[in-house]
Length: 435
Image (tube, rainbow, N blue to C red):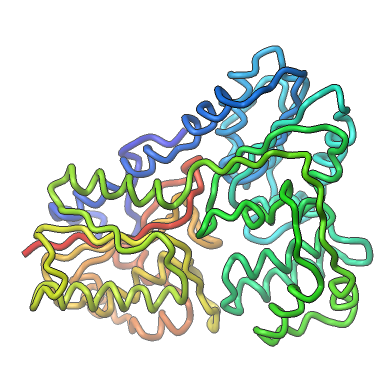
């Protein structure tokens, strides 16, 4: 279980340096913000309101699946028939009575994703109309369970997923295509559960909290079809191969409506928690957006510009000290061969543009504790970070061009390392400013 105060830094250069007061404030805000958005309370609140009056099967899929299932099983007691949890490698916390636990690949599906999908579908086939199903879904589910459509291989699905993740498409566009590559997504799991009825409690990691997009909408009516899929493919000029195009060209809507979908936990709550804890640390909070999109580097640039502007002319009439807060999900257009994630890229770009600026600390955080295909949750930087990199002979621009924010931040002591947090409600970027 994630513990408040568990945030630590990584890096071989700055670990022995004393943290500044503002960095200590940032570390405390991070830990307390994550603690506030853990899913257990949200799950229990929903369970206390819905009607589960038959024997219950539990299916939990996503990065927060273990925590959600553990809370649900405690609540259900002897009403539980059986359950299954599918989560990311390293995200399981141990055994849950009556529940099978499986781990699989993310952000790319792997053979265990296919095996897990198979077991989920087998359980779905065992549920009858005399029973109910409780689904607990969170971000990451799109990769964690995968059953390719007939005629497709896992390798083809992985190749398409890789192209989508690297082309700059947003999560809605990515999932529009991914749903139609799969025999379990886009409402198809709900369809498989018929005639059983039930509920899905959904932890949102998608801007706008659209249930049809979270974990690729496994339990939600899907009204997208081949035309919607082809629109995304053409928009980004994706070369998917003739076989994949033939399968996607047959895409159709899935209209099963036997599951009541309830979204709880989202980026708005994440930003509100950050605002609460920055205020407690003595900073006036300003939530600028909870729907950030676009390129990660551009958001890093915007934050840096705001810091310079606010400290020199204060056009926003801010009350200092202050905290500027933005939530959402940016994208990284991958052109290099480095390692990182969108939050690390935001932080590295901001570090470059904040160079020499005093009294500013910025952190960008993936609430699940894993930013991109790395073990870091994000990055934390200030006006000295780029100088430290230069002192080590590093060219910040080259690291940005190679999409290698992880190694740049690691060497400068700028990685945030929380480990898996047990929640997944998108990303938050916070900049602390003093005068």
